[in-house]
Image (cartoon, rainbow, N blue to C red):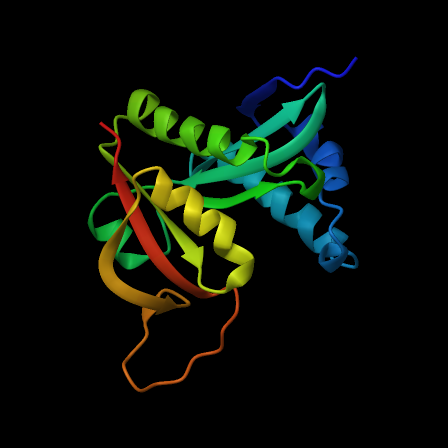
Length: 177
């Protein structure tokens, strides 16, 4: 019998292989070493208190993860002392089960209670693959920061062209305390 209870905790070094197993989307094939290095960096930055990485698991299987970055690369968050929720991911086979929402709420709770932040922010991509995330954030009280579209954390100027990829974002934030 499968236990469907979602558990969330801070990532540990022993979780690395389990996280890699959960990332089985076709577009990630061939990027295993790059992804492994990313999670090693996350672990290191967890130790230096630059970020915290949470993992979600069901019945001892990693099904998702998310980061809180305390010093965002997005200037408006830095200027306003807002930590950034970053890289929220749920394994494809486990989507539409509330895991993304649980990870989002964990970030909000941790930032407010454990760290004393009053606001938290995030960036979301602007093409269809991000539709579920866009809906999740708007349903849960995140509002636009009013700075418009950003490409690689720089304002997109009217009349200028940018490449529509994962670096084209709109940033949102929320009062959490």
